[in-house]
Image (cartoon, rainbow, N blue to C red; front, side):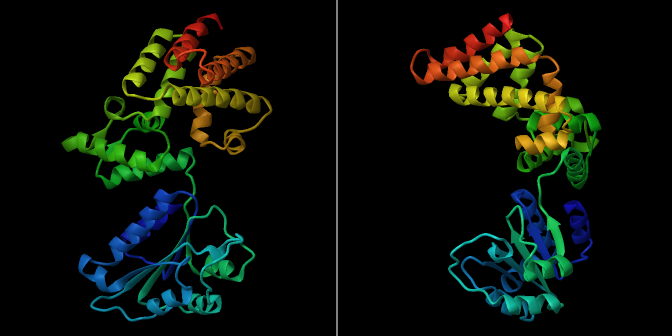
Length: 339
């Protein structure tokens, strides 16, 4: 896991070459930043740090830089972004790369240089010799979307880095309210850590009091009120969203998406699919599937079909001018009494 690599970096246990790849940009940027901050002082940055975009620069130019002795410091850090030659993508590259020279460097890297490849691709081409060489000799960090358990570990570690302890139920509430976006979670955790002050402790009350809700999480709360048949509270959330100038059509779209997720989760669970497989099939985070599964228990198939049909009709009526967009969701929520 990426956190294990971060711990080694904190102890200055650097690899000669890092391959950081995946579709979780936050983890890629964080790993890169941690390496640079731990390996170089501010004064050394001007002389011993380089970054290359391999869509613009041949890899051999970067390798020559990596083989150059550091100036006024112990080591160099060289970043290589966008190594598209590690993928199976068919692209018209602007530059030609001397891959042979790169392979030779991997076999015998400069002892004074930390070379970091950041590949923002979900998959690499495992058939290529250069990919195999990197997988064999580099420290590989897969920056993938974290599952629920990994997210909880990450939150705990992030809190610890801020010198605070967070309760388990507070972690669960934080993920429910703020979602699974790591940038959003970082901002919320940093805010909660400041609020904790001398107590060095984050509890569930602090999370409920301070965590900013995204639009999606407000919609989730709205659906939760619908689940509990507390329509007056659902309407209150909706009116608050309107006061925040949220677009009714966008609210409608997310609302429809949440009910489709509930329906899909219910159906796939019935077929025997597990949480992870459902998440993969529906292309959402497993934690969202977990929450949707909890909501699905309160509806039968006919109720969910009727709700999705009402939302679809409402979308049509708004787009054809038959009803004011602000009024449509209000009417939808009131009709839920009859379902």
